[in-house]
Image (cartoon, rainbow, N blue to C red; front, side, top):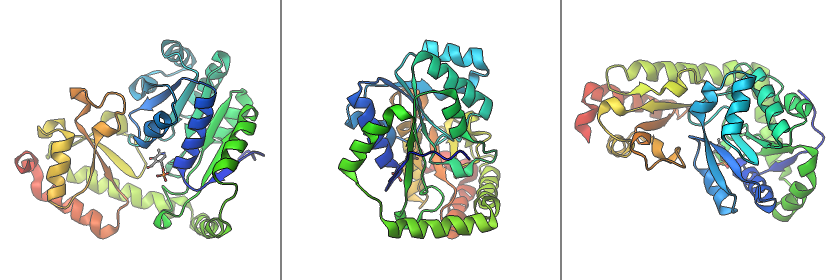
Length: 313
Ligand SMILES: Cc1ncc(COP(=O)(O)O)c(C=O)c1O
């Protein structure tokens, strides 16, 4: 992987988002953020005063090839495009060719590309995305996160990278907020990462994610819960479910599940721009990497309800 000379280490991914938001606000860069996505991203961007509009993931999924991607950017004018790769909650990820085409289209239009790589370690076909960004000549900011794979009781680190044009401003904002990173945290995280490297991500992480996903997908058969189309190929540590066929909305279902001890997130929060629309209220997001006992109990709740999910509301 390309060695990038400039980086900052933030305590959490939200801190990286906050610095990026400050850069966008200071330069009055209107930004298009992927929808759906985890709602703390728009919340931080709004808090910093960034002018936000959505870019719909479904349109990105459909825009295959250079011409379609260029047309998508023309139809969605902006100063910056903010993507999450893979996306939380759907797991959708661009491949290397698509990222290269997108980076070049952004460069040609003077659009800054921002990428949240928090879920990077779940990607099965990894490629050198920083090499692609640097080679394209696009203006970019991007960040990493240890927290989605090595939770370590919320001790985490987020590396923040950028193209040359943002180095100065990011440095001054970073210095106002943090100045340095705890060596203790970094040494501890290093041990986790080296331990994972010794056995490989497949054994340390992916096998469990795949087994849990498989169990969940078998458990929901006949319940009215379905895998959302956008998440059919997801390999990340959460599952994005469509609950339309249960007859319940996301909030009704999350409350009903909670009363049985199963905690899931309502989907409308991820539709940060359109969650009030009727048809954006039929998803729930379930975390796959809870402790084994918790996951087993969750599957037990779904299995016991079977086709009666509707009756629990
Ligand atoms: C895609 C994504 N980015 C950033 C964050 C923020 O991470 P943190 O809470 O560790 O700051 C989250 C939180 O879940 C997330 O899902």
